[in-house]
Length: 287
Length: 92
Image (cartoon, rainbow over all chains, first blue to last red; front, top):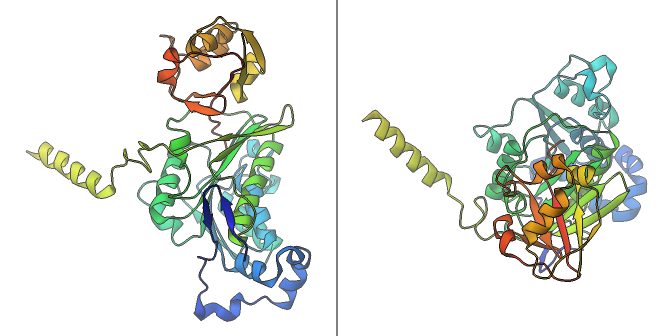
């Protein structure tokens, strides 16, 4: 078994535990063997079974979530959980390739479920029509093997980052604007977290975008997820990839953990401490 | 001495990229970026606030190493330095 290479760290991707009750389901059917034949030339039965056993949480079914979920589906990742709160709008259709004209006005989750099932009926697609917030994030992520950040705002990204750290599961970050994009892979305890890299959110805006940009960054994210699950190659760990679609130039910047990070460093306040503080404040108000 | 400044994403649209500056010796990093960004008001305003302080989300790097923007006024640039200035992008 090959290992995931992180500078200074080697981590095996064999923490994905099979469920003995569903052992039979996890064996590849004849149809699956045919479907995945060309990629099994790369990583064999073992690799394909790893993908089949995996459960990936995709936060968002928009510009990034569309290509991400489609390519994870065709690769045969066994369980995809897609969360989104929005309905399909005409302005989404230049980039959100899971949805089409007839889906306008429909919930993105319903559209995503239908398309992904049609693309690959051999995987399980779970969709959740809700807003990811502090009260539900941990429960929504559940026992996922990885979180794909396909969100369009930093407050939710920071929530996903905190839950990834808390649950010790990787976060595959991607973000885009116009012809520009960025991606990195966060391995809790081993790499810089999202807040180490971006301690402050940029201002909110209606961002310009051309569909190829989330397509490109989404593919980087999927490539990371698959190699993480397969335990092969070198991840974008402690490396921020920056894509400039205007010059067709990709470059990377080395990033390091911030010892004082409020999410993963000494600046972190545990939920328990926060709860105690909140209780004290509440009590104080009552008095 | 020459210093190369590279802007990314929105900053690049407003200010261009790979700008080679003939900088004075002991020039402060913050002042250097201000001089270059000052050629386009919108670009300057995207990077600095009304007090001339880096906006909190701006990422600043010197020769591939992250620099805290609050430290930038005191940091001197050297011949051959490469400075990267970029905003996190937020869309998805």
